[in-house]
Length: 133
Image 1 (cartoon, rainbow, N blue to C red):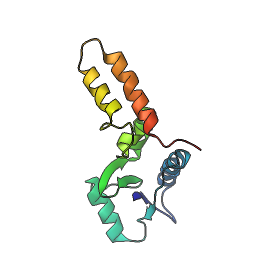
Image 2 (cartoon, rainbow, N blue to C red):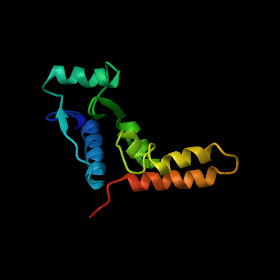
Image 3 (cartoon, rainbow, N blue to C red):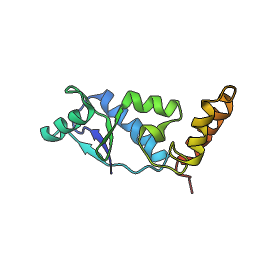
Image 4 (spheres, rainbow, N blue to C red):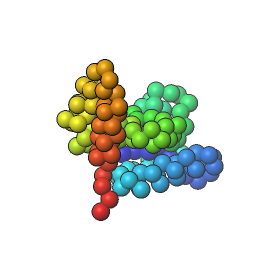
């Protein structure tokens, strides 16, 4: 299950703004998630920080099951680079382990094939996102 470390109540404006942006993007892509409010529970806060590997980590921190995905800056970078699927560690029909993804990786290693490999990687990333109905 998706977990996004979050705060409620009197948390900072910046944290709430970043949290809202993460939720907006995930909602827009129809990716289900669960908000975990760490503001009232020290154990949850420490668990979030342990998963992030940073004793001072602040929300939002994004975790897929037991796999740490990253913080807000990493999330935004993944959105901008169109690699959100990989950032979120989502399996997909055209992810790295798929035939298209493996073909793109092989082509990237061949001289003169970088453009085709990049096009296939973009296709793989696009195809892996849930399609809107």
